[in-house]
Image 1 (cartoon, rainbow, N blue to C red):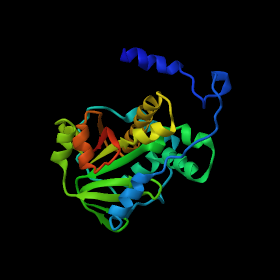
Image 2 (tube, rainbow, N blue to C red):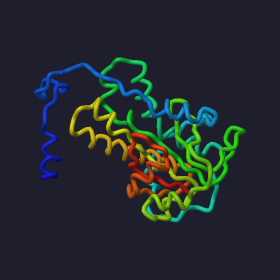
Image 3 (cartoon, helix red, strand yellow):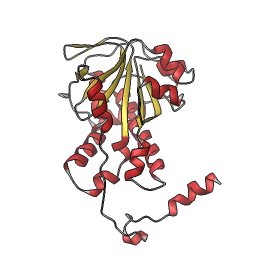
Length: 254
């Protein structure tokens, strides 16, 4: 029954579909308000760490190397993050999401809201060792990434290797590197704006896209990666202090 409903959802028509898809071409939209950042701002105003955005461009050859060179189940390297590694991985992986977010806030163009579920995705990163970035020390801990400000916001301080491995259903590799990225999404809010059954499918596809961006950028920087969707959902939500988002994917870098 579920499989039938899932497949048949591809063929449903909606009021905002173009006329040639039997839709009504409804141009109204309701932008997603980024309440998650506002909520974190209010609770962690003194814990902002701005990252370096004055970075060398990534060439097409670099991206090709990242795509071809990326492998699963390779041992993590015995190396540390260099200056700008974290900055670069987060900055370039979120270029598309940053562009879409800017258009949502600056334009009434309907497409800027509806064409991408990136507007509902959020990145958290757990760092396992203190890092020096732009003459500021980032303590080991869990951070929220504010992609528009290119800044990390401290959620909780400490070394959480054991906790993250446990939250990944006991997979030690999920916390075996230098950092673990967790992608979360606000499905409820996205679904209220994009009122299609296929919104859930779009959200999962875009989650995988964003994860792929992280994998490629980490590979460009010379790191191996490990990914898993196996998460203890409620426990991970508590760890990340999520009120309405759901954790969807883990990418470890090392």
